[in-house]
Structure formats: C-alpha cells, structure tokens
Amino acid sequence: MKSMSKIGFALVLASATLAVSEAQAAWTAPPACAHLVPPSGPAPALDCSTGSALTNWHSGVTQGASAVDRLWRSDTVNQDRANWLAFENAVTVNLPNAVALISPPPPATLSPLLQCRIQGLLDAAPCEMLRYHPALPCALDGYDWGYVSGAIYCDFAMTYGPGMPDPFISAPPDICSTNYEPLCKMSYAYISGNAPLPTAPPAPMTAWPYILPAVSACQPFTVDSGFGSYAAVFAASRDFDCTYALE
Image (cartoon, rainbow, N blue to C red; front, side):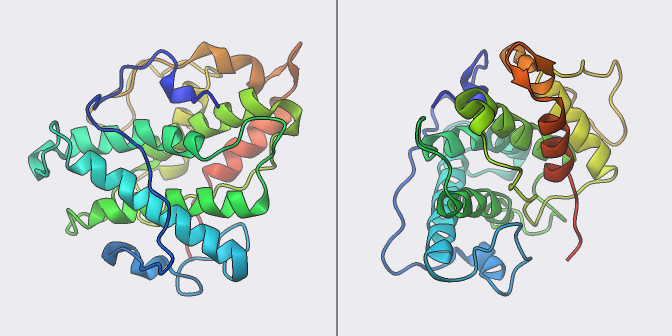
C-alpha cells in the first residue's frame, strides 16, 4: 500500500523508523493510555470492546505507542520537550504511514477486526505523547487530526477505490483545540488537494503551514470524475472524521 504521506514529502524525522512490533500475548496498556481500555474509554464508532475485536484494538494501541516512542527517542527530538513542535509534526506526518503498514493491498479489504486495530493505533498516539508532557491539555489539535485523517482517507481511496470502507475512524481522545472542527475540515480538504490553503492562518495557529503542500494525486478521489463518484464519499468521510464528540 502506498501511503499518501510518503508521496512528495520529506519526512520530518528521517532517522525515525516506524517499524511496528506485534502485540505481546499478555497485553498491558501503556501508562498514559490506560484510560482508553474499553469499556472505560470513549465508545468508538466500531464495537471494539469484546473478543477478537478488542484483541485487535489492543494490538493497535501497542503499535501506536511504539511508533510514537520511536519518534520521541529519535535524534531530532532527543526526548526533549524543547523540541515538542518537531515531535508533534513528526507524529502527525508519520501516523498515516503507520496505518498504511498494517493495511493489506487489494483484493483484500479492511475487515472490522483490522479497522479496530487501526483505531487502536490512532487512539494510542496522542495519549502516549502526553506521557512525555502531561501538563498539556491535549497532544494534537484539529489541524493535526485533519491532516492525519485526510491522508488516511486518500490512502484508502487510492488503494481500494469504490471498495473503500465506509467512514470508521473516530477522532482519538487527547486531541482538542479552539475551532477544532473547522480547523480539521480545512486541513482535511487541503491535504487531499480538494481545497487551497487559506492565505492567512486562523487563530490560534502559530506555525502555518508546518506540513508541505497537498498531494494532488488524491484530488480526483474527492470529486465526481472519471475516477468515480467520490464527492459524497469524501464529504461524508471528512465530516465523520472531523466530528468532535464529547463523551
């Protein structure tokens, strides 16, 4: 599977590999993620709370935490809060790659069990970030999440075409910001090539943009064109992924 965020991007941290390890047989939630363990955590869009679905969610959490830890220990971040913006940027850019690594190529599809694994991976990332900076109110903001979820939409659309799954990615806990949903939708549309970047950043953004320009290869998968009828699919995915549900 070819990850959106690998096309045309120089990764923020080239030295940080996102090779993810399989979950151990006896799974233990990373300390900062313990509150996510079903049924204590927010109810996901998928039912990942029992049986094999929960096992797959556990596996995803372990992988997501491992990916974030590797970036934290990279030479660029060097486990230093002074480099937090670089850390935040690296997690944002690399999360779609981590999802791509566990998503099978066609003709396989994303089964509900694999979808739970992907949701667990994404749930773990921001809570594991806060392990290193617990004083922050949240690890990622709406612009970050719009990039992550928009890039994943493009990965799925370009890989699975009309067979791509219905929207299922819920915004993880530990993501927040003023104007969360507008920022998310703006970033989502921008990274997919569906809309240009605004000429001026909305408050309270301070580093705009910290991610390089959108990838035009995805743009045909956001409209109705010769590639298929994607306008409604794109809008539904954008709106679903950018919904901020208070539990």
